[in-house]
Image (tube, rainbow, N blue to C red; front, side, top):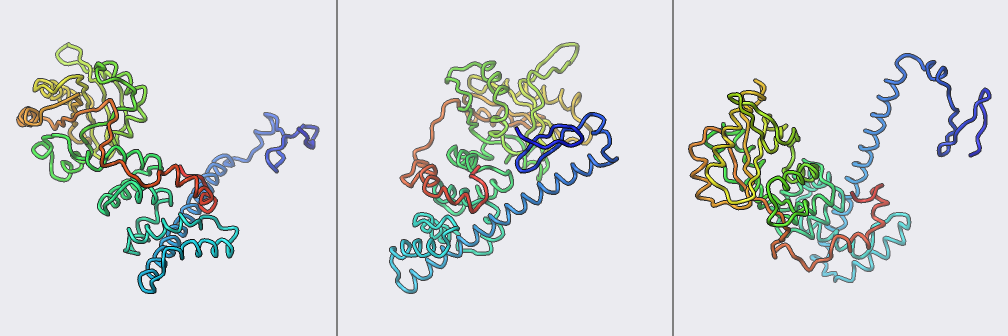
Length: 372
């Protein structure tokens, strides 16, 4: 690699910038505080880049909504036919040859986008926070405004990529959230009870583990730890992994909690017990015991009461409700599924996201980055 020399030292070329090698002695001549200032500048530049990207996306989404709304209004008031979209696509491409995203299909999605979201204030305040590919996922994968609003809010709050958003939709997160059988209403104060209930779901989808239906508890536990990032995603926002087979000592005897988490929003420990069979009442009693140990030995005085989650292969709702009724600790019971089985209602004849991306590939240039 060619480069000039400074004080007899060879140099390296990095992009368009030539940087001279510095000896250990030279590196020590950096002024006091320079390294800290450089780190601060890097953070500011990164933050500015993020704000710029968000601003570009916001303007693009609002522009697309306005174009879609304009098409809707003129088709309704002036009787324009569907062919006007093809004409508009051609004329916009000719007028703005350097601006991408004006294909006929994308214009049709702009029209569908405006039709699905008639409130401009909601689009500006909420939806403009999501990239265009997220908007396409909401349009293609969901049928009702209520579900679209719910998933849009979750995507913004939890920072989902487009792929994660699609995965959450396809696994029916909206229908599973808050569906675990719990005694939270009786054991926790109102605000915490509601948040705790919404933090659990039923069933939990563990098909990413690649295990068969007859997998045993230890095999499931091993796989969950191996794929802990995906498991945390399935658990939902706020869960932090503490450990597996967490040791607690009670009465000079050793006990081990399958999986232990800490929930950052609830400010409490969450103990998870895995059962490869059907839920049995004694399972709740054992978990209640573990929670007493966690609250005594691990819980900080500023933490809220610990929660328990029993993940079972199957459970009888009535049996679970009876078992939890007189427990002293807040516990939830939910099923897990090891094999993916999407409900038929999630199947659709609309174009797949992958097909849309191929046609709208150039839209990425307007956004400044590829879809996540």
